[in-house]
Image 1 (cartoon, one colour):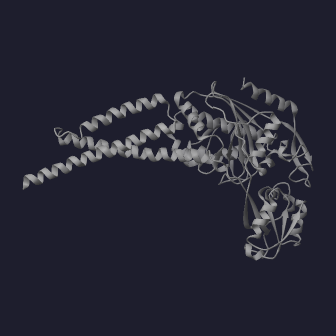
Image 2 (image 1 turned 90 degrees about the vertical axis):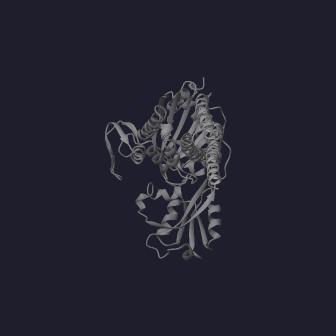
Length: 481
């Protein structure tokens, strides 16, 4: 009887070891397949990985099954199998998160424009239902009719359309209308060009309007041929889907063979044609963003006579998240200055900046005589610092998970996921550094009523400098020879 119990106990132990071995091997195989499918790791590293761990697993498998192997060896093998199974199990989750992330950022961008129902700060209205049957002024824009229709699903109101934005706000101030329905662009005017009105408003409700998408991708093998990426930096936090003006407008021209990068910055107020609205439709480049990222791309292609292969859309959250994930960047400042509204100060020379500090450094323009010209230079410095840190060390590998978490939903591109994976694979293959150059367009100050978005307002724009544009065109084309 005792002999039979010992035998059953021994058999249970054998089956336990075998179960552990089989589960661990299955986990390893799944991890290996996912690693191959991801297509980010250079083949030479994959081969080494498969050989080393394949042989190791073979040894552990051999020492786990035969009856002649002593239990202490089986136990040791079991411990290692549990350890490797746990590590590769975590690795499977990591790879799955990476695949999901690449899929999310390279999905079609669902763009939506936010419209705000706003009243005077001291008004009696507190909820959207309070405005049922009231008069609401609407500044006429591309999607204002859609926004008004969406609002009518919530409440019934007396809509009054305005083509003069100043008249709209004056009527609200004089209580001729009860509220306004305005987009982000019009809302921002109260802090910039219409700040003298000293109009204080409060938000009652939001309406979201989808923006029609057009396909602008021009596919190229980014590991073998030069390409242009448009970087659109929105002046907002959170979701990347919201349509906002573009504080950052930069073309990154990449030569993957010779490992060269050219950063071409265009001031946000550059006076450009909006191709979708006719040859006479001119506006600030930043306003093009309110008609969708496709309009910004078309305007820049028209300005520089280039093809933009892909876009990358980012915002404040992206900058902070990525830079904090790589534990800050080292940026060389041309000036000593402080951003008075935030208390962030930068010294002339090298500075180690956190994500928030880097964002403030890249946004500031009031501290400089050259204003927006210096700002785009600082934006280039931040991007160059990020590229250098990621490509010149093991940061991309050791901080990859933190970078994914930091970017979150605040980054979008129309680049295919397979191209993103191959580009990372190319960089990991030899970890070569990149030669980074920069240039920026310049112009002259101009105040004009002739802007497409706000034709009744006298706004500041930067008039084009043709010599600057021609020089930028030439340098970009040199990368494609």
